[in-house]
Length: 76
Image 1 (spheres, one colour):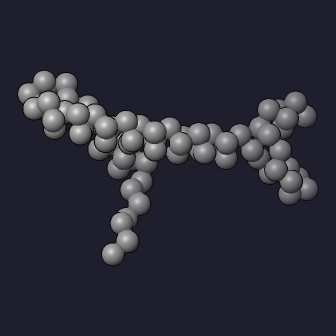
Image 2: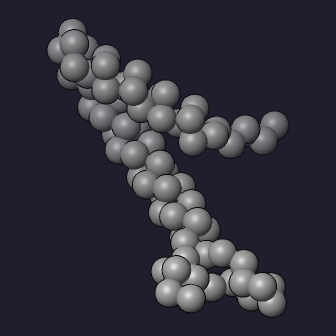
């Protein structure tokens, strides 16, 4: 069965759980290392999602239907 792709919010919630778990300091070293690695992967996924969203939001549709950067629209 194909694995369900998690939403940005679900990934962020998972990262928060990992951070809270690691901050308690009551985690065995092996589990802490695994959790840290998972946290790094989640962080990278979140960064990619935010970067893509930023690129999408930086464009607006011009009157003729062409995409233009947001800052170019502000200059008009």
